[in-house]
Length: 89
Image 1 (cartoon, rainbow, N blue to C red):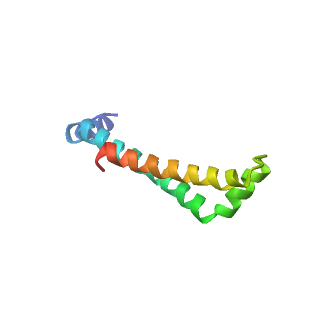
Image 2: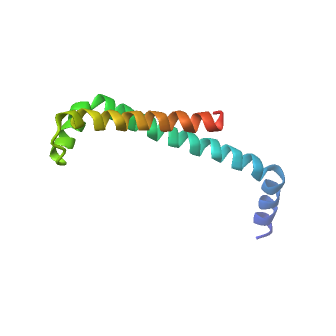
Image 3: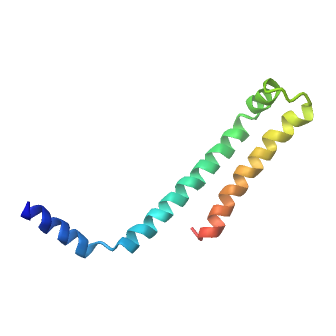
């Protein structure tokens, strides 16, 4: 038990929680951006499927079949840009 306490004390002396917290914030922001970008790319490359899903969901207007996936693509892209702009990553 004393050896564990010694190891934990050594780690505590060498590791700054402020630095760990900052790095975790950067990692979290990068994961959020990756999620937004992945979803935007999926929307872009599977645009036909997105249009079909709008039709299946009951949107009767062909203009909405195109407009809603494009709006979703714009929102996902803007979300990624906003996260990057706010963090300076």
